[in-house]
Each structure stands twice: as structure tokens, then as C-alpha cells.
Image 1 (cartoon, rainbow, N blue to C red):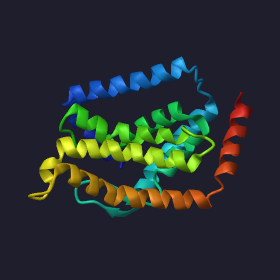
Image 2: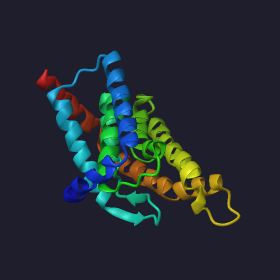
Image 3: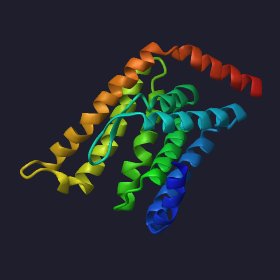
Image 4: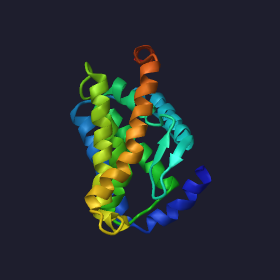
Length: 213
């Protein structure tokens, strides 16, 4: 997996506009974190790395892989959601960006800088919206998945409309194609989150942060 990612770095270097766009998004994230005066702690950095590793691992456990991209997994988005729950939307967006970058390195498909943004970092950054309503966590989680869904649909309409069957609207094609895997993905994540002791996990993360202060 990591060998393949390293092998794809030269391919990505052939698209400097896409790299510039990714760098611009990363700069905006750090600017947001600076304005909000969010301080990185050792425990936070450890949890970001741990959750990224878990996301990569769970993403390999695919229940179904769509022919033209997109997968139904065993709750691969849960670690990213937990980061957003614990540290807020800013750190959630940063972690989502990093995972999107890793995903791009693993399986790059570059047509246009805007397409790269809407297919890789932005959908996973949208999971940071899970921190939007702390008192209504399940509603925030739905909002996060809706944000990811919108990013993929926009990319599908603009850049992959030619894949739509004859006589089918690119808008309808993008909506149905992305709903076919994101709706089951949301249901699986929601079911697992209902089983997991989420509050105890978050409390343990909080205690780790306090010990590091």
C-alpha cells in the first residue's frame, strides 16, 4: 500500500496546478486554526495519526467497490468522525484533508485541479461538520455525510457526466451513483456508532489531553 503511494508521487508531480490547489486548501485550514487559536497537543497529534491509520485500515475492508470509484466499507469514516466529535470542525477538517491526500496518493485519478479537490480532500473534510451540533451528534453526523455526498455529486456532474447512460441526465446519474454507496456507508457508520461507547471513548481522549497539558 505504502509502496504504491510512493510510486504515485511522480505521477502527481505532473499536475502542478492540482498540487497548488491542495496547498491552498491546506493553507486555509491552518489559517482557520490560527484564527481560532487552536493549539496542537502531543495527545491530539497522536490521536490524529491513530485515527488516520484506522481509517486507512478500515477502508481496505470493503464490502463492495463501485465500478467507477466509491466503496461501501466497514465504517471507515468512524475514526474521522471521532476526531471531529472530540476536537471540533477545524481539526476534523485537517484530519479529513490528510486522509484525502493519502487516498489521492494511493489511487490518483486527476482530470482537473477542481476535480481533485472535490474527489479527494473536500469530501473527507466535510466530515468535520460532525462537530457542528455537539448536542445533536447524530444530526451533525448526517450533515457531515450530506456534505461528503454533495462534493462527490458536484464532481460527478461536472467531470463524469459522460459516464451517464444514454438518455440519462448527468445530474440524476451523479445523484444515484453516489447515493448507491454513501447511503449504505452512512447506515453502517450510524449502526456502529450506536453500538460503540462513544462518550467513554471521547472522555478517554479528553483525559489523555489533560495529562499532556
